[in-house]
Length: 265
Image (cartoon, rainbow, N blue to C red; front, side):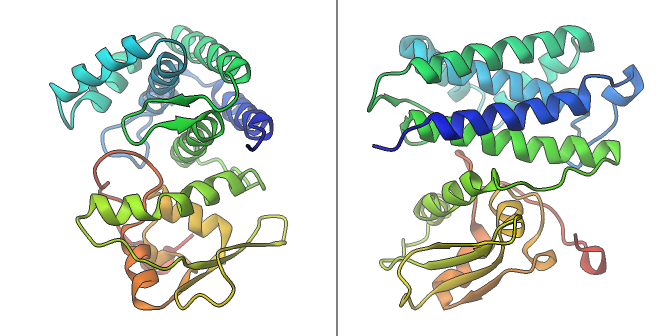
């Protein structure tokens, strides 16, 4: 079984980097709109704080987490926005304190989790490493939204390898959530890492292939950019379909972002 320590360490580094970006914001900056419709910088951090709390319940109190899932089922499509809205109205210093406390509690719980533990989630159950990977993916993606609102640049790091692996592992989920048959064969995925190396996944002789920058793949599977604006290439009909529907997050298909055309990132 893979040691979850490296991904937990990278989750902490990703969170700390975002924390440094928002720690000194003015009240006016906290209410700047981000690319997510209707969400301010405060909504983004509130969402991360809420998801960390939900993750902590899943790891430490599965009965309480089950009650949260039941609650979510009574307000389908709204519970995520409602949670973000509730946190966004808090004073920034309180919101930051809550987010930091939740992150620390979740880190401690993940590090203390027994080997081979499995935790419930809104999607399939997850291992310790998978839970940490999902939190890193969300922290990175929502951090991008915050950076966009602030006009800041967050250079990609090789921590994206965790997001890449999650995006690949959720391939079948993406097909299923769209009501499409799951491809029988594995795909070959070859991506250029931020540091310049080549990350490869799947059999070398696979018929369907995806190639391009790892950053662009991560932007795609977190639906932070439209496929038309990314330098990803698909060979094979199933791989081509995947790039239209890929999502690394649980829940129903997201709306994604509109194409930017010549302003592609």
